[in-house]
Length: 384
Image (cartoon, rainbow, N blue to C red; front, side):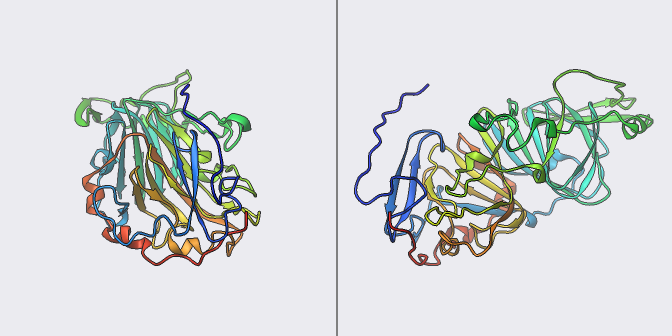
């Protein structure tokens, strides 16, 4: 365990409780270690920390509208590269047709987050029906394919040379947010047995070190008649998540962690009531998340902390600068106009710097960095 230099104190005109009871006319900014788990300092500014007049250079916040990408390929290995580093790879895949070949990722575990459409996934472990909002966790080495009757869109999240695990839920226990019993697994059902009757020659496209090898079989390799063990494909839908909430305190994004890898986390934002305590802020707080690059994929709903963001978009905030809500959202910092947040989004926080891929660059909204220039919100706050 790290022993940080720590000495908690209060200096000047400041609140003694983070994210609550801000001094009148101020905006809170959090500076912290280890995401939101390490020591932190909270500053109370006269102006919004994102009220810049200009921002240039590679650290600038970026956004990508993946709806603009012209994609239609039956293999996920042709998916658009959005962001990547040595430990994490984010791609966006769209197909109008069923997959004629099997695929296998030998580089690491992969999450298939279904953004739109539905289909039937066939894999080593059996048959699983998938639909929009599903997280499908595919262990490294799993053979799989999807039959779909209409367009299917998915965000692919690879844990390169790594595995996905469930987070430690600490004080709230293992059954909070979602019970492990909610994880569905494939079944060797009638549909799975029926696909085994397809005795034509099959090919398996295997990705290893991001290169594709093709293995041909004179039979259907999804021919298992049974299996046992602890390792399996699993699925959970975002509508099955039950978020942690506090009516008196705005919880940090880490409270919404869904899956973990060694060098990044996957969090999920789902609908929840807003805080009701008069002194609690009711929008995401300004923060320097200097230890992580922050990525959010917007799936569905009304994204209350961002303007001009719609489903199918991605925002990318590299670690190293202060980020937080847009000016319009700041006008509702202490009083929201509706009872709760109505959004579904996937967040990836990466320990190591992410590089923008060709797909991300092709779909970039260049004006995103200027979207904070709407002027400071009317000053709010409560007396500490």
